[in-house]
Image 1: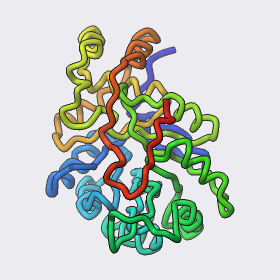
Image 2 (image 1 turned 90 degrees about the horizontal axis):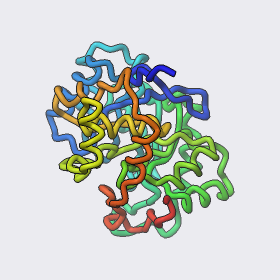
Image 3 (image 1 turned 120 degrees about the horizontal axis):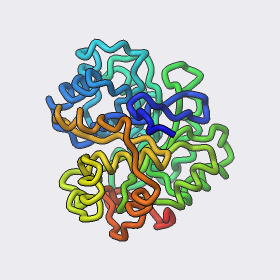
Amino acid sequence: MAPKNWTKETFTLNTGAKIPAIGLGTWQSKPNEVREAVKAALLAGYRHIDTALAYGNEHEVGQGIKDSGVPREKIFITTKLDNPYHKRVEEGINSSLKSLGVDYVDLYLMHWPSSTDPEDLKKHYPDWDFTDTWRELQKLPESGRVKNIGVSNFAIKNLEKLFASKDFKTTPAVNQIELHPNNPSPKLLDYLKEKGIHATAYSCLGSTDSPLYKNEELKKIAEKKGKSVQQVLLLWGLQRGTSVIPKSVTESRIKANFEVDGWELTEEEQKAISGLTERFKVCGDDWLPVKVFFGDDE
């Protein structure tokens, strides 16, 4: 089989919708940089832009989309409900749509399974949790403002709790989770596959100044391929069946992250990367009022 042209590939969600294999992540992108990054990505051929209410950059993302001249219907936009908005889903989605300057988003995710009290971010609501939030999210697709709904940072334990909840009707289309060779989460990926939930990988390059860039095994494979370590990491994620949303604000890197067509990692190379033993997480849960990671993803 010929290597895939990943920049044109999509993954089909359980709703029948198609999510582009590669998107642009915008977490931790500084103000004024995001607008240019989004425009550069769309002009380079990206068709998925990922943002969130919590990032505080939806307005700039919307400006970048307009600047690009790429028609709205050609772009897959993901945004997320912020933790203190769990009791105010309507307010959350309306705020995001207004900031983005669009009538609908393609994917709306519950950012974290933490219904945080807006009066005190160190506290969780005593009378509300993510199963209540999901009950409200399930109502959105009917309104046409949200095409697909999903979750983010959900471990197996919390997914099980969601499926068992009394108002559960709609299986999430996506679980957006941290995935890279030092946080590979094979057990969680297998579970998602079994449930028909697509996985999108955030921090797929291991985030800024990633220790993965210095990894000898990865450097060796990249050299052999005539590619960068970043490109190898993206291919590893794509070949596992996950969509990837590398974050960058540098035009040259945005373009380089899109150079994944027409080559592939061999089974041995894929295995070698999956076999890396170091472990680290870019995103923990110690800043949240509740624990959301339970070490059940390996």
